[in-house]
Image (cartoon, rainbow, N blue to C red; front, top):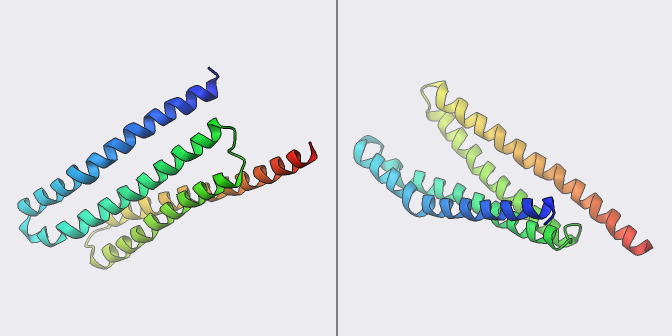
Length: 159
């Protein structure tokens, strides 16, 4: 088995484990955590459902990225990564990252209005910039994939 096949197999196994952990987080841990928070801090109980919804939404965005990565690995394995089909999956990754970023930007603005100290705002800003960097890197990689796909199509036409 070639090193790239091992890498694809190992990455797929990691994606399965990560997806399973995210499902457990989404279904059990996050709702339970925010229920516990509401019980321990009744003054913050009104935040239980909005925080649960936001957290589950961000986990869902991560799950979309994992599914798209799985599909892209299938295209790599079939030696069809340089095709138009791969661009659709990369577009879905860009969309999921953008959707998560937009909601995070809204949370950042809301927290900025209500915050009494810089600690949480700085953490949210760091997450906002980090997610923007991830999205921009994926956009650059999409452009490279598009160029490579065009080159492969041209080479296939010549041969």
